[in-house]
Image (tube, rainbow, N blue to C red; front, top):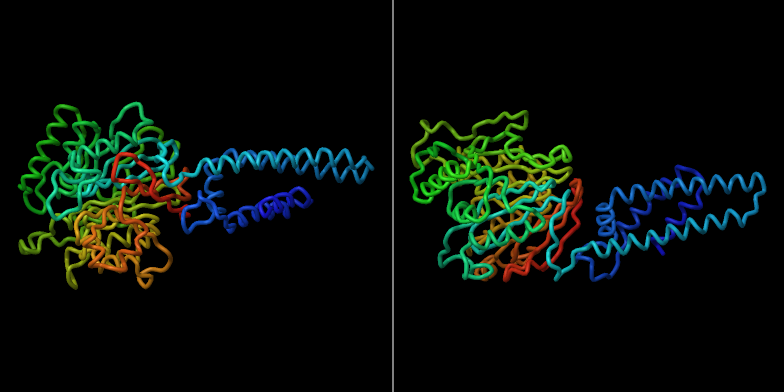
Length: 489
C-alpha cells in the first residue's frame, strides 16, 4: 500500500506542480522501502532494486507515465467540466476507475518484470545484451586477466594471466586439468555466446611480466584478435633492451600475428582517447570513452592529449635507479555515462621520500574519482598509497590475487581507511589464500568476497552498476553473490 497510495494521489491532485512533486515522491519512497525478499542482495534495499530494474525499462516507463499523466489531465479536466456543467458524476467516476484499474494492472506487470529481471544467487550469469558494459575479472589461480564487453559489443582483453604456476601460488581454478590460457579461452567463449563470431577487437597488455602476458599466445590460438597494444612496440628497448625469454617469445608471437593474420600492433599512447574506440555502433554511445592515462612514466596532464614524463632522463640515473617493469605499467580510465573505471597494471607508489620513479600519485590525481578501481600490483605492500587512494576514492576495489602476500596488510588497511577518503567502499578479491587470512586477520574478513570471478555489470546509460561473484570451482558460471546496485556519481 505504501507504493500504491502516493500513486493514487497523482490522480486526485489537480495542480500540475503537485502532481509532479508526487511523481518524484514515488521514487523517493521506493528507494527507502525495505522488504524481506530472497531477491534482495544482502545489505541492499528493495526500493533501490526496483528503481534499478525500472531504469532498465526506461523508455517504456517514460512512455507509460506520459500516457498516464495525459489521461489524468483529461480526467481532471473532465471532472472540472462536470462540476461546471453538472454532468452526472457517475460518468466521470466510471472513467476514473477504468484509468485506475488500467494503472494497477500495468503496475502489476512491471512489478512482475522487476522480480524476473533480478539475477539471483544460484542463477547462471545471464548473457550480455547491448547497452550494458560487462567487465569480467577472471580467476585462474595465477595472474591477472580482465575481459570487457563494451556497450555496443566491442570486445577487449586486458592482460592474459600466466603460462605456468609455481608451488607458492593458489590452487588452479577450476582445476589443474587445463592451463590458465585454456581456462581463459573457455571463460571468454562462454561470455561471448550471444556473438555470431568469437573474436577480440583489442588485446591490451599493461607490462611484460609473466603473470600478465604469459597466456596471451595460447588465448590467441583459439580466439583471434584485430589489434594488440603494449607499452613498447616495436622497439622493446625501454628503459633498456628487453632480452628476457618471455619478452622475446612475446615479440616473436606479435610479429607472427602481424605477418600471418594482418593483426595491427601499436604502442600504448598515454593521453590518447582514440586508441580503444567502439567499433560497432559508436554513434549510439557518445558518452563512452577509454582515456589512456599512463605508460612508461608518461602521464596524461588532463588537457587535450598532452602528457608529462615523470621519470628523470635515464642518463641522469644509475642503472639500479632505472624504473623497473612495474613502474612502466600502462593504465587507462574507462568512462560510460557517470561510471568510471581505472586499471593500471602493476603501478607502484614511492619506495622512499623523493623517489623519482613514483607515478602512482600523479596518476591518481589525473584519473580523479572513479566507481571501480583495480588494485595496482595486486595490492602488494608497495602500492595503493594514500595519495592515490585519496584521489580516486573508489566505491569498489577489485584485487586479483594469487600468492600469500596478496593483499598486503598495509595496503589493505589503506584501502579500508576512511581517514584516507570518506564514504563506504566494497572490496572484492579473486583468490585469497588461507595463509593470508591467518597473517592479515581482521582486514581480510572485511572483504565482500574472497573467492571467485568478479564481474562488474554497468546498466545502460552508465548511471548504476552491480557486482556479481561467479563460482570459479567449476564451469557452471553460477552467481555466488550479488552486490548493488551502486549509484554512479
